[in-house]
Amino acid sequence: METINNMSKFPDVALSYDERIPADVFEDFESFISKTGLSYTKESQEHGPFAGVEWLLPTAVILFIGKAYFDSFFKEMGKDHYHLIKNGLHSFRKKFLSEAASNQYKRVSVPSTKTPKDPIFSILFSIMAKTKNGQNIKFLYPVSISEQKFHKSTEAFLNLLAENYSAENDDLSIQLQSFTRKQDAILVRFNQSSQKAEIIDPVEEIRRQKHPEDMEKAKKSN
Image (cartoon, rainbow, N blue to C red):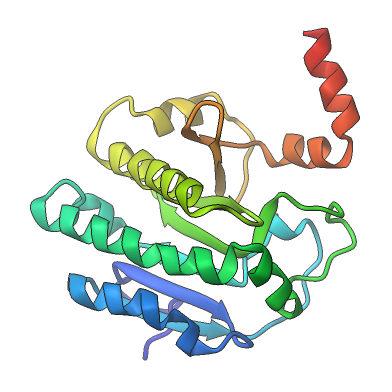
């Protein structure tokens, strides 16, 4: 099997996972992918030492969705794929985004001395893709999330990218215009208040997690 990093043509969907996670964990997801006809590959990655804020680093499991998928998103076949992928994604919630999963996979977490005691973003699972302009984009999930909220947040992220590929002056492009900080990947999370997938500033987010009392004071003073 060709490696994800060295493919001459990136597949529609790819999975990268820590070598200490059993490959059969992904069978439920792969059963849905096999029904779509989308090109798919997976690759285990050697666990190595990392330093820094954990949710800024590669999660233990990363689902890559290629540009070709979003290019065909609004075609009839693309719509069928969309529903199948969404159904398949629910297996990731059960296995990696629940309180039980967090405890089960503590051994594959990325060691760090700089991470807040109670991180709000999962270090086990994330989705990565590219914008229509080729920028990397990473969707962050909470450490644990209900099935309903997982459905809403995943749909919001996929729709944000689908619109980015199909429309001018789309929401993601507008958000990017007001975000000037350079980083390897655009970080996005689901905002429960606005019910939208929104770009976050990692510097501000780290500050907020480390000093929540200061951020609360700032809000009250505005």
